Length: 162
Image (cartoon, rainbow, N blue to C red; front, side):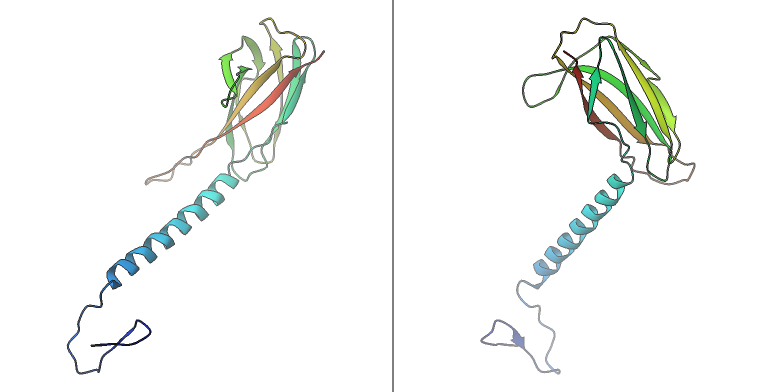
């Protein structure tokens, strides 16, 4: 095997096979890059299929509010809702707030919408901000084998009217 000036190697066809320095690592690197692209593509496609819809900002008038939750996906979603206080700092969720959420948990068929009513039992002040955490979990089918279930949690801002 003869090294060439451009970094490649030359061999005649009758010479014995000699491993080229660095070649196993380049194939491993290519494999890792291809695998990471495939994982990211599956993650983007999987997350897109989970997205439900809920308003970003929900006005709270007195102690009552209502919000429409929608399922634009092709699969049914199990939806759960919890109300929290706004927390200072990077994390938006503080302590949970005593509230009647009706319905608090339900299954939303594909293309359907559900009106959800909120009645806050805890004391709130005008101008206060609460957070409504809405979790969407796809309903699993009876197919066998290993599954990866991705849940989506959307956090909506609930503003107490002044």
